[in-house]
Image (cartoon, rainbow, N blue to C red; front, side):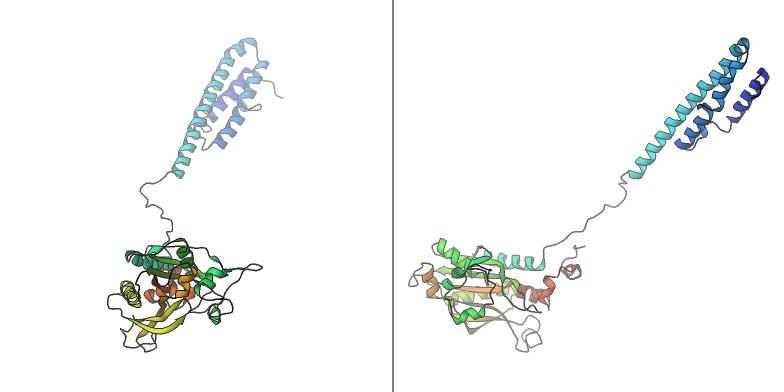
Length: 354
């Protein structure tokens, strides 16, 4: 190693001061560059550190004269490094804050918003109309007893009318999935003394092949009115108003004789075609009428089964499919579209569905 002299030390010190004009801590672009420069100058083998170590080879007088200059430079560098580090850290915090800042000038993010399902909105409209006509809402379980679903509705065991209902029976159980909401009427009559006027909306189940007009799970709204002196004329007047509120004031109804075991007399109820004004089209099969629901006067056997005296009380009942109404009102030709959850289908019925 070359011998250190005052002249060589001062030359090395002057060179270091000159290099600091280009390698000043204030010019470091980031914390990593600043740390590398600190190690190069002030580390264990840094340039200034080596100069300080070499002072031991000089005389005492030279060390006293040159030492303070080196220490002064070291203190200035340390202060410069600390100041630059603080500035770079503050800048990094500002950059991070700016990156994550909420820009209030931007439009808000609007999450997708759904809507009430077409079947639900149709059911709500049907029950709203009937509630304004004095009917109250009644509910019952989806799983029913054979007694409530059939026997008390004048459909005893082995009766041919049971063939009208493709029933789901629970395995190893006497219970079944209700085939209509009429059991709700039975439950209500058993727990309530007349007069009464109820609707029983809900899901029902039948073992049917699914196609454009049939589903194994669908919805019904049934109505029941029990009082003294209730006649078929009351039924007709009620359904006339109900259909006109659903489909428009010009809607007409037609009653055709039919058979239901729980009503007598019974009728199938048609409405004037909504699409051709009864002139005849493919939808109404050129008849001008669309079959819509079943209705009738409550059978005396049903009244007796729930403890009502058929000599005192009479009433009417009707049942209508919610899907059928929704298809007519919304112009839907395939019942399966209601259950597929295809947003392209559902968007048609509410411009706010995104």
